[in-house]
Image 1 (spheres, rainbow, N blue to C red):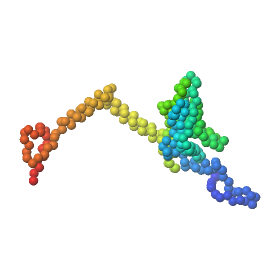
Image 2 (cartoon, rainbow, N blue to C red):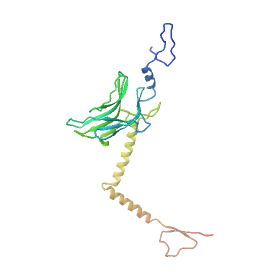
Image 3 (spheres, rainbow, N blue to C red):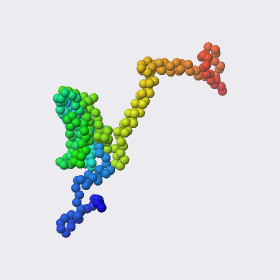
Image 4 (tube, rainbow, N blue to C red):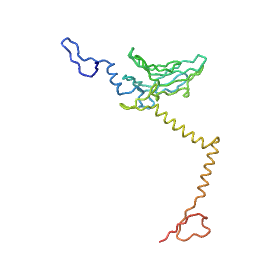
Amino acid sequence: MSERYGFFNAVETSSGVYDRTYNAEDFASYFSKFISNGVFVNPTDGLKVSAQSGLKVTVKAGSAYIDGYYYELTEDTTLTIQVNSSSYVQTDSVVIRLDKTNRKMSLVVKQNNTSVSNTTTIKELQLATIKKGVGASSVSAADITDKRPYNEVCGFVTGIVKQISTSDLFSQFEEIFNNWFDTIKARLGSDPATSLQNQINEINTKIDAMPTIRQGTAAPSDSTGKDGDIYIRVTG
């Protein structure tokens, strides 16, 4: 039987050796049990990748967590994307890489590579993918896909014990919206503007046809109102 436990104060034995010793891996293993991998949600744009001028992108300041190891980008950081000199469209990715061998965590641009490493020594969180046209001299917002919400490649640290699957949540929102939108399109037909105006006209016609409610202390004359109106006589 193999057992692990901790943490306890170390006591020096008669031989000068301490009977309890721990290292960084022990603490990381402990914290990884109840804090999930991902980007911290506060601030909401933490570690978000956005377009800058030319072939540059900005990664907003923020924090992340991978397998019990903590990462913090203390200020907005600019990264340069390499020119696509190939004959086809390429897609780069920006990741946070945990490198256990070299004992470091860092931002990395993976050229023409959207894979996410997950080995015993290298673990990555994908922050964004960036599409590059052939010979493109700039990156636009439309070229960047924010991958932080997707648990498959990144995800958010949303709690200590119970985690929310943001990928599933976003998929549900998208499905609800698409179903609603398909229903609206079916009702509006091929000419949405005309269909909407016809529906508005129909509503206005119904409003105009509604009876008018009138009141007074005496019965109304024949010239007051029209057939179908409602008259309330106030007495006393």
